[in-house]
Length: 281
Image (cartoon, rainbow, N blue to C red; front, side, top):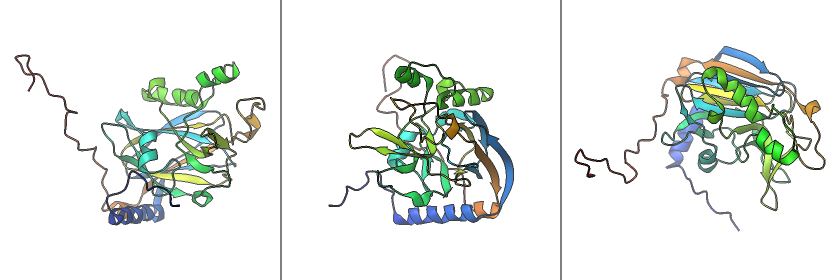
């Protein structure tokens, strides 16, 4: 019996084909390195990706999960919206998927143009990679589950990372779990599996607008060791660094591209503005 059709459908196959052709062009275009850095284990860092540039996250030394946040570099109220991206694209993203922003902006702010794990698909236990189902690990849940204080969960790493950019803990949002393999079990509960990435695997995205990005090298490392429960232990021996590369794309690949506009809904949600006499029009 066929599964139900996706609720959120593109307007036309032509638009999908045009989008894929553009992504393939970006992936194949000549590039000029702009920035390179390595993120140590159990740490966080924020950086800028200008519109029209490509950012690649690399598993430099083997399997390691990274928790990614993305904001409009000029307006942090607009940031990646994990829930809407799950609906518009998928709960686990790969090449050609767009990362959508929050209301009232609702536009693709980044597009995945390369994924060395695209072949992974669905494993025998229903696991898939590059997860939008779960959120970041945080010290609050950790204290509830373990009774212990720990300052280097992804939420904390991201909080420290964005402070130099004028943001705070309140700006940290639900993440894209890069390289993370997850799914829902028979009880409809979230599960995490050992990260399948190998040294050299990558996920890259094209910046549709000027972006501020922040990444945490998850303290769970490759998630091969339970973080909570009776078998939990400190998985520091499974932690590895991640690399970040930002490249400018050859102008020829951007000839017909422009940053997407914000959603053009012009209504007032059924509200009306008050008149000067106190009545409403």
